[in-house]
Image (tube, rainbow, N blue to C red; front, top):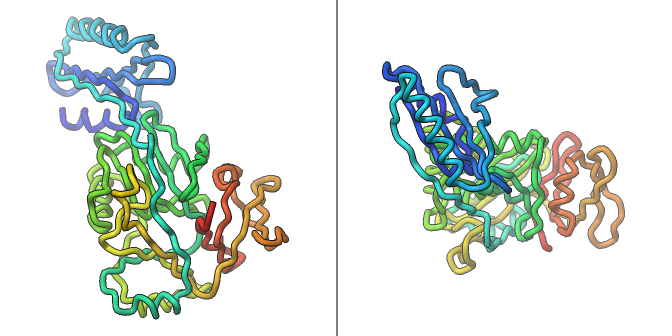
Amino acid sequence: MKTARAKLSVAFVPNVVYVADYVSQSGSQMVRFQIVALDDCFEVQRIDSATCSINDPYKKVAPFKSLYMAKQCVREDGIALEQNGYDFYEDADYPLCDCTADIVHVGECEPVNCFEFHSKHHGHTDLVAQPLSGGIHGIVTINQYGHVHLAALGCHNRTRLVNCSEELQVKRLMAVTGFRGAILEVVIENREVRVLDAAYFADRWLNDMSFPKRVSYVLNKLKEAGISTDMFIKPRILAPVELLKVNSEGFVKGYMVRKASSKPCVGQSVESNAEATQWVVMAGQGTPVKLVTAIRDKTNVLCADTLQFLYDLELPNYVCQAYRDVIFLAKCDSQFRLPIVINYSC
């Protein structure tokens, strides 16, 4: 029974609003009905532990205009199962939860030279650092319908990620038990999504937690669901002098640094996230730039002041759509890696 329920959990998504389980009298097989809220209807789906697979976990039964009619369909199919050797086990309602509604970007991401940072913060002992090898800094959200969006930090223009590798990477997180949504601070490098922090994850806001506790909460949720934690950039406590080792030619081209007590850079209100300051510590100085989409995922990087061409990046179109009104601070490090590009102003 436990194995059957675990197998069926792969199909659980944030917009499931009702679940009913039926178990064979032998206890070896299970059928789950779930009702999924879509934009214009409620869809009944059936999942059978004897036949479901990771690639095709559920079968669509029928769409209905109301939740009441969808539940009536489940009850009728449940009666048919009971006549064929199954017993009703349990059911549950799961109200929709849109964690992405009315969120505010309250964090500040300040770019700073490693030597300047060391001189100002060398006496601090509560700094937590995450190594950066490059990438685009932003916010990724998963709403109540399982839709994935990307936004620049500080901007409310969001671009939906559809049918791309980044969307699939993020959607793996929906296998976490009880998952209802997510708000993640990320770095995207070479089409790989790396998570830095979380303001909302699975089924709760994390604004009341310190940064180490937020990280621990997310990692434990991933481990419980059997999801690799490699997606999360693990934080380390570093002495400020160690930040001087950043090297524009090395693997660690910068550090995302914040206080252990800091709040997430996205929250429900400005007051609740008043301490959400963080720093990107780099060697040398960055350059304010704008990104302009060219053809075939080629992105022209222009000087923000003169709009003169600086260099090319290979970025998907959706990145430039999400960041079209943003001026960046960029650090051009190597032709083999994306530079560290962070939100500078909107």
